[in-house]
Length: 367
Image 1 (cartoon, helix red, strand yellow):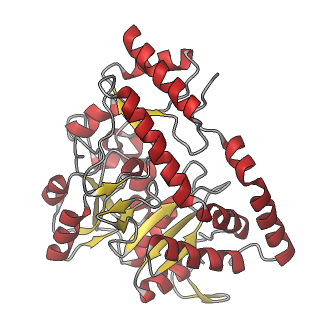
Image 2: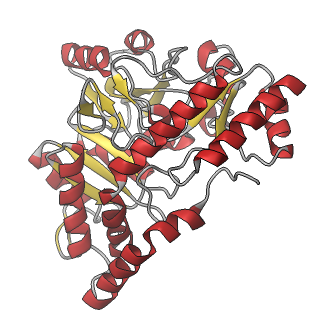
């Protein structure tokens, strides 16, 4: 038996009847952009995640970009974030005209370190963008306190953490402004690109709805230089179906994570869930000193793995204008050479998880 890193076939099969009904509903409606499915999804998403409002957009990158633009982030500003994340986090900052400023990560969680964030603040810091990496909540309280004391906005990148809890509150809806991605592999994933911004301020929500639709206040009246970033009706209908199952899917991810922990403690370095967090395991990321060899050995044993993320942002060519170099963020750089993501999705059977665990134990012994 092989275990793929992701299995969309089983996901679709489990929901096929509900999905077919949702597709038919959109086709029968004649609405395909900014219609009733999107409006309903925004309301249902906000209610499910504990926000006052949600604004659907085209993807997670633009969710971050538009959230920052909605609070006035622009050229000349700085936004502090993590160097160990998907490049799109930093690219979204750059699209606003602002400068990403990186802060090193916590060695246990691999989320941005609040102490490092505090050291990175300058007179130009307009916002802090903590990433809830791999589905594990960042330690938000110190960052929120810093932001309040210095007059700096906090925008949560919750693109990998739908439904995760920080001190009992849903991430993305804690700071008042949070970005979500609905890329297909996410805990709440569509069958294409999609995103949303969770927002608690009515005026900011209204501005987001303008910005996502070319800056229009009404048809053909463009008051501000917005972009075209609209969540289409097909994706909204799919996400409405999957939102109903999100809590159960997240619980299954936690069950799989426990099975991994029970079988692999002492074999590889495992993710550490902190007392303040309830993680939703978007990814299950282990660490090992011979990561590349382990990855090869697992492939030979029929287990799919990936690396999230092998190159920290400060040494990516796209961020060369920031003049980053090796050694700037040693915790992130060390982690990037050791991390390996094991299969993690709700449709995994216990037998498949056990096969992965056996393959990991066997592979580690062979290194």
